Length: 287
Image 1 (cartoon, rainbow, N blue to C red):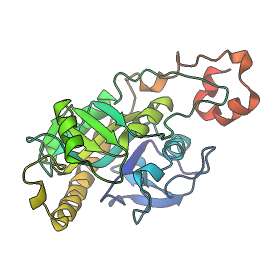
Image 2 (spheres, one colour; image 1 turned 180 degrees about the vertical axis):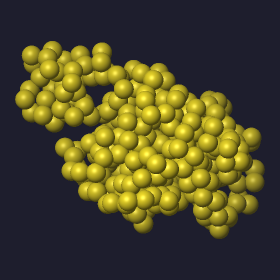
Image 3 (cartoon, rainbow, N blue to C red; image 1 turned 120 degrees about the horizontal axis):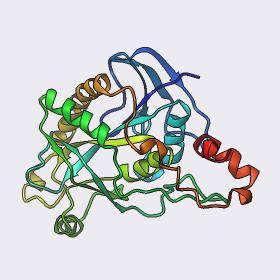
């Protein structure tokens, strides 16, 4: 099976990664079902990467239909140690404008009933999640964004809503009153699962609109939104190429040992079935 060190999750508008060399499509089987699509592996800026369109190529999956566990497990199986997650978002702040990049440091979960852990079934673990993104990956993305000439905001909170409908004006105004910064539908589950998989994770949020709170919201047309999506995709590709090139070879963060003190189940009580299912994630801690 092809191996990769950096994973790229593409969101709305980003369904492929131009510039890949030695391209292969890889279907990965997981204990959690099928990922959104085949992983496209190859070499980008001299580094091995795996790209996955989280909604499937052709945008076939709603946010609530995405198999987040399979997507992240598949990246882990491919050897990925860092994930750059590209996401189209709405802005909840006047100064975070369409075509800007935001690198959120926090998430707020407003989803309903999505699977967001690999654990259960007789094996329990509680990861630390106070700081949900990897600061090293964020550093690299910030440098790459600035070098690409894209207006970049570091920090802030990403509200992860259920969708597929966008916010009501009451919801949007409430999130603003809470001090939230951007809103999307996918990244919270990815961030949790990446932490459980001991993979560094960061969001490259590409602003497409002002959500519905803004007084000029009704003046924004579908044509403009599509134009913003396309331009954001071009910016994201430029930033990703730069970030992949700059990414440190070695990891100096704590992401790679997130499970070291997280497993709470008595080792003697863990069933052979649970051990086998989660061996890729916890095997080194159960020897």
